[in-house]
Length: 472
Image 1: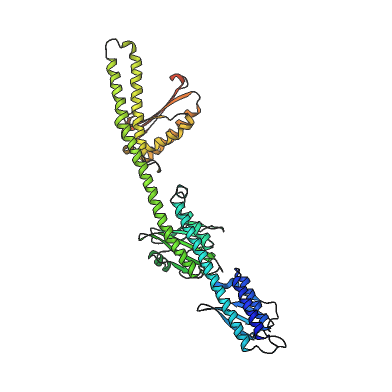
Image 2: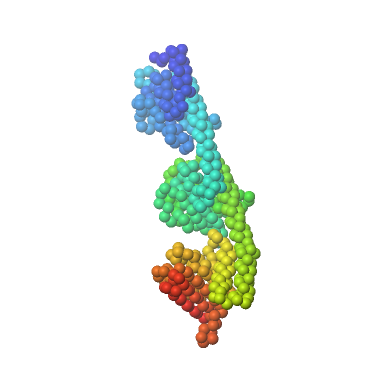
């Protein structure tokens, strides 16, 4: 005998009320499945979800008897989320109680409707949570890139955050190549990244044409998709390839592959990832512009210091030297002539040092020194810590234009050896480096001369001089 209508309706309402107050989706669906079996007297009930995106819910059933293999359930109704059929609510037979009635089917449809509503609400809640995570992630990336903390490795910051948000196996950044392809320049992955950086998409690939056109590419299985040409494609399954585009300029591609056999990306995930890539591209451009402004400010400051040194300090030193020279010529200055001579020599040396400093300030601070002057200054600056003070460095002649690179390389080797020798000697108080061209050899040949003079304490003890010459 089936349950009486009134008590069964009461129990149905209780089941629906219980399903509507529980926040855990699996618990809600469990109540619905158990209620379907109890209210109809079925031997067993099951909610079978066939939609791929709901794969984590498949197989919720009561512990009742299973139908015989190969036979269909005695009663089944579809479960819809809006207009999409995502599975079935199934009942097996009830031993000794006869076939299911129209009332049983109507009751099962009510429960299936509630199951669809619960799954739909869970989708909306999960979508809202996903949107919140992606928005927070995009904001965090922007903040990191536009602060000092995030300027060192901006691409890695974007790749790592996107990988975590997308639950991907890897976060990859590709840059366009000169040949017209794309190359992986950054890879963030908890797995073995061997061989990923440097992998390329060959020119002419259909995927590449879409990316260069600013269109995202969504791939169901990277390993088997004929559009994929990188040698690491066999490691991955579902993937998103999103153009990093700002102000109409493509600066790269963000790829988010999942492992082979991984869950496909949903439409919501694709949309959120595409929006993240757009914001990340803008943040990368803004961060690069900010660093450019900072470099320009440094260059301008260094140029101002160089001008001040030239216009104020050098002129004052030169005027002081002229004044001392005139003092030496006055009657009665013979007794202080030696002292004045040494003072004039020191001023001349100081003027040369200041001019060398001006040259160093004109070198870009974040780039390797260019020209022989800059390379010599780099070597002397590196030796300052070992020597206890920076060597005094002087240049005579157009050393940057007259000395070929091959001769300059040999000169730097000789300079490095001489400075190392000076730092190894005790009692060295001052080192003077002079590079001169043209410097004539005893045979009359033109060349370049390097002189490294190391003075001992008091100007005498421990002093050495190393001279090196090479033809041009």
